[in-house]
Length: 193
Image (cartoon, rainbow, N blue to C red):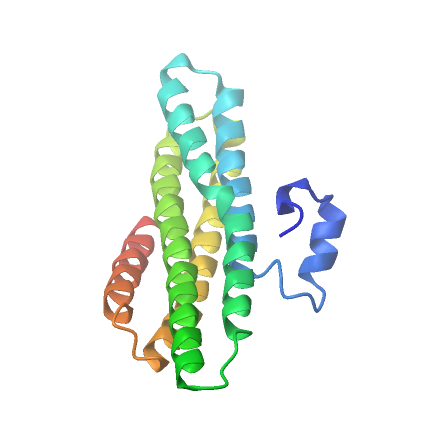
């Protein structure tokens, strides 16, 4: 990856997202929108300016730091997976090496969005606390932030689902544990939404 998605002008990011370019894809956009959702909640806390909310604001800041890297990581993971698919397959040894590289890249491309979902769920929990503490006139931003965070988490689950299907087709020994993690996170997300 040449340039961080976060460094692109918003208009270019939108154009690239809507183009035939493979990245940014769903995982990247999930991370970016999730980070903006957290930003809305942080803004509501900043406007409320209650010193008792400082620890909640710091917690949201730490969560945002976990979420933001997911945008570029998704691009990196996709590029690694495409590199694995381009490996030679001229003989059995090449095919086995290629298969192993594809599996490893797919596992990574599944684990990262699972981590993103976990961080977004934690952000949903923190935003619930914020909703009961901010000034009434700014509550709509917390609610909007929660909606964006929740949508981003479900979008990241969709990325996981595509990769899990590939691992299942490959009969990867890692698929059952990753599926269990996905199921647990989806259940937590359902409860948090």
